[in-house]
Each structure stands twice: as structure tokens, then as C-alpha cells.
Image (tube, rainbow, N blue to C red; front, side, top):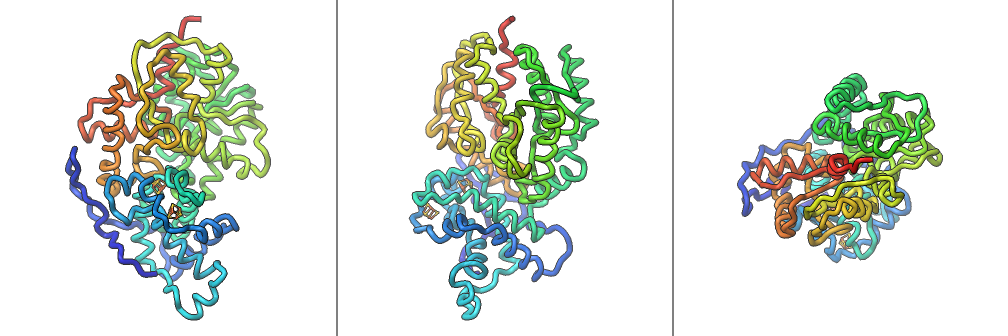
Length: 452
Ligand code: SF4
Ligand code: SF4
């Protein structure tokens, strides 16, 4: 593969709002293996799950360039390296050499040079640091190519070759080894729940043998926003729901999905599925976490090998259901707000109206950003990007798009329903000394429950 794109100097860091010192470029490797084996594993990973759909996608690109302007990384830099379809180049090369209709000819005549490990290392920047797997490019592509899906598939190849960013590898490995990506082990979770229950003088059921509803948390909520645990308990009490947390399946965060490690992804999803089956739950409520939604709502049945025997809903959908059913009674907030759509829940998940219904029930005057809903700009921290330190400068550049959008609405509150987005906003707020603090929809509801 040849490329005239130099990814060793990934981004201009001067922006209208800030200057960030570019961190030294670093590429990460996991495990010991010869370079040739690494390349072979990556190539095998790129084409391993190659079905007809992926092949059609790669064959049908008409190079129109429309995906470029859909991508926030291209939008803020104008740099062709960040064109979504370019991020798939190593996968395309693997497809042409190993799988495509002319693969034998390409190989025999040497028309496609083999990919080198150096090129794959450099491609970490494009597949991980500069892609939040937000799916905006997939939505805009006139040929219907799911570029974000292919980037996730390409990450599988990188994971198999031991070429993940260190932070994602470490988080996923810890998740697989300890059961939690951020150290929220069953004991830590139980201790936190007990502490939150005492602080808030509320009963929080854990490990009930039978319950109608199984609630889950993201590791970010458990470790950074534990008020979410109290908020969940207050709302469930208000609704009179028979619910529980379970220490054998509580963390919905799935770093296996983000890093491209399918086996870890599977294990984390199975824990939740088995916990819900064990307590006979009819509903599993996913927390304010975008990729948890994708991992279980859309991939859960594949992991389980048959239809899930319970319903999977995001917390915003659960709240909206109860608004519609007249059970969730809320005080009216005399405020205006704007809603940041988490990519995996709104665009990729389709849960666009649920949070807006809940905000309407709170009496909020909604001031939409432009663009919004399915075409909203990503906060820049999804797909694991917020965890990758070397991607900070680029991420902050992208974050300015969001700040400008929110400022333009003039709304009093920014609100979202994803703890990963919230964390990205908190980090961006501190970095830019911005005066807006992102609010959690879940906590806003819990703080404004009407008396029974
Ligand atoms: S928008 Fe679709 S068809 Fe056009 S260049 Fe991008 S991937 Fe190819
Ligand atoms: S999924 Fe999002 S971040 Fe990734 S290439 Fe597409 S638009 Fe850009």
C-alpha cells in the first residue's frame, strides 16, 4: 500500500478558542510477535467477517466525497486524511489483495503492494484517534455505505494484530480481567451502592432473586457520576417498579466493542444477559451510555444466539414510556434547554424523540441546535476517543463545534443522556474554561419528581 498522507503530524492545534501543545506521536503495540505475523493477523482480521454486504460496500464507493463534510474531524481541519472513506484504505487494500474478485491477479502481478506494519501503526491514528464511530458519514453517503460499521470491523483487525491505542487496550483488558473497565468491581459497586443509599436515605435493591426490571450502570457513572445510582433508585421508587441491580451483571460499558476485541465484548454483554435471565427480568434498562446501547440493544441477540427473553431499553426510552403511561409525574422547570443527541443513541439507535418527550414533561422550553437529532454533530469523545490522550488536541478542536452550537441556541441548560458525552463535555468545559455545564437527563428527572 502506498500513501502520500503523512499521519506523523496529525493535526494543527491552533484554534480560535485555544492552543494545545501537540503530544509526541506514539503508536501502541500489544504482545510480542514478528511484524509479518502482526500484518498477517490484521489482514486476516480485516477480511475475516467479510460478508457480501461489506464487499458490496467497498465495491460501491463512487468517490463522491460527500462523507468528508459529514465528519467532524474533516469539518474542523479541512484535512483530507480525515475523509471517512480514506480511513478504510487499509481494509480496502486487504479486500482487494485477499478477497475481491481480482485478488489473485492483484497478488500475482504485484499490483497491490503488501501492507507494512509501519503503515498499520500509523493507521491507528485514523481508525481510533480520529473516528468516534458516530455514523454521521454512514447517514450521508448516497450509496448507503455504512462507513462507521466498516471502521468498527477494521478495528477488529487492528485488535487481533495487537495494534490498539494503549488506553483502549488497557481498559478492555481490565474489563475482561476484573469485570470492570474503570475498576468498578462487584465489591466496589456494592460499596458505592450502600454509600449512595445511606447518603440519600433511599433503599437500593441489589441481587434480588426475582425482579421485573434489571437496571444497569456505566462504569463512568459508577466511578465519576455516582449520583446516577441515586437518581435511578429515586425514579424507580417513584414509579413503584419491582427492580434490582445485580452484582453478577451491572456494568453496561463495553470497551471490548470500542477497542475491537470481540471476545471481551461478548463476555461483557453475556454477563448482563445472564443476570437478567437469572432474575426473570422482563425489561433490562440500559444506562446513560451510548455504546452500551449499541452493544446490547442491537448486538445482544447475536451474542446470546437467540432472541433475548426480555426487552432492552435505554433509560430515556424507559422514562418516556412512563411519561406516556402517566406514571412519571414531574415538577415543571421554568427553564430553556438544548439537547445534545448522543450519536449511538439518537443517530445509530433511533431514540431521538424519547428524551425530548421527557424534557417536554419537565416543562422545558427546548431550543434545538442546528443540525440536531439524527444529523447532530458528535461531541468528539465517542468511540473511545475521549480516553486516548494523544488524541486530545484533535478532540478539543472538534469540541469547539459543539460549544459554538450550544452557545448559539442561547439555552439556559445543555442536557444529554450519555455519561461518556457528559465526561467529554466536562473535560472540554475545564479545558476551555467554558461556562456551560452539561446536565444528565436522568438526574434532572430525579431532581424534579412530583410528590406522589
Ligand atoms: S460518501 Fe460514500 S460513495 Fe461518496 S466517497 Fe464517501 S463512502 Fe464513497
Ligand atoms: S463515523 Fe463519524 S468520526 Fe468516524 S469517519 Fe464517520 S463521521 Fe467521521
